[in-house]
Length: 395
Image 1 (cartoon, rainbow, N blue to C red):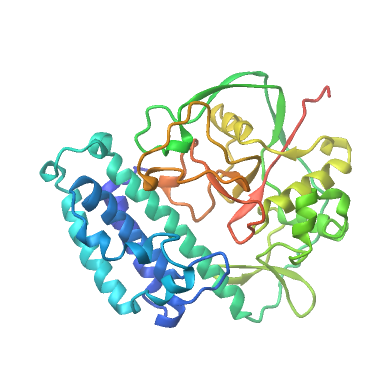
Image 2: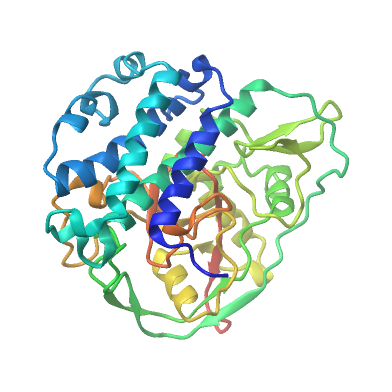
């Protein structure tokens, strides 16, 4: 399949984001459906703001467009409740956005008319805009799933999900020195750089992320009630949440089903489990390892293991759910921060862990091998699952 040029990709992302909010009421666009997520209108406006900030403010030196809305669309500039209250009505927001987006596309289609600026080298400007939009688009989809969950639609399962003990399909990676990180990629954020050489011991990685049937087996084995499977922080967090994945619900007969963008649906047993936190993923790995046999030594993957498995092409199945990694989100050695926050990591947080691989809703700008997503260990409203790694056979 031929790749869409960056400018065409930007136009498509603009339209996709607009199509998400056009059918909704003004109140739904301005409502918070999850305590950790802003309203749809804020995410939509934030995308336009960042687009203008990179193009008009940074490259062209125009301050007025962004200054007028900076307090509304800059995280932390105001208390959240104040920011949401200051959001314009949906119709006004759309008119403002569409006018700016059309003009921005025209300017980006005529790069020779823009002043000389480092962001124009190798097409980096459009690549950064597309990535910002792709991330915000995915967050809008998460909000829409939360909206579905609150609707509590009646549903009856047609194909019940049955628990099945985990099985593995392992592929080995030999000990050696491997490259990780981005090298010479104009799209790369600062947190992907500089490229590193890491020394990895032998390991085996499951070709498939953890599936629904295996997760149900963990639940039925008392995984959510057994403190021994959980870290100290994880067990403390566990006391505040339900004993099932965030997107799972039960029908009147007690059968489990999932809720996605399209509403309630049966849970295919082999599909990756979605809507789990890193705490849950870690507890599952501990439980799986306790089963022994082929599952002995199971742990969450480190992000280096995932990236090396992808780069060496021993791992070809990814991108259905974001996959939690064992390691915290930290800078690489000799990290140099981008001077502009919109250009990269923004900040490294002690309680954030790495996510890799993308999900079904992740757009192409986020799907490169070196891309590092991250979230707090307790975040379970994301499109997140898990993949396990194992020691070599002789251990």
